[in-house]
Image (spheres, rainbow, N blue to C red):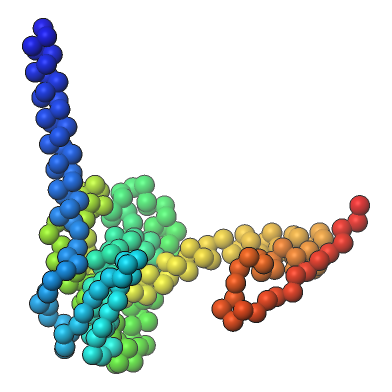
Length: 230
């Protein structure tokens, strides 16, 4: 009985060690290459991509298009899954990753037809800006292709990353718009009720800039004080 229990414990410990080792190996293999030289099709001239002590990307390039390519490469190395979520959020395509649980949110966002708007926005760019955006897109996809295995987020969800498109850059902007403006209507209703109940001084008071926030030019907005009768 003791021998059997000991054998079971050893087997369990071995399986646990193997699982931890496999998980660590997968995470390690997913890390981007941060040192050495890489030969890629895209930039006209050699570019350098370094990380400072805080991990911030530092790029040296001969021209803006080469810099855009390298920036796209750096972005995809550091946070492609986040980029993927942002574009899918705006386009209403999250269900492709998360299934039925994301359908209602996708329906809500598809109402805006942001992917169609992004495609239209591309046609409004100058040839210079379009070329830069296309180089950025090539850089993103180059980093995606350089991954030895899919990032762990895709492994967990059982999905695969899709190539980046130039229009996706606009979708990221639209996604930020949704994050910042989603409750605008409700906020305006609350402010209007405050105005009707307590007057314009109260709405001025609750909407003033927080004194802890700092403006870029060091300017200050005057604080609004109101006297509330007892």
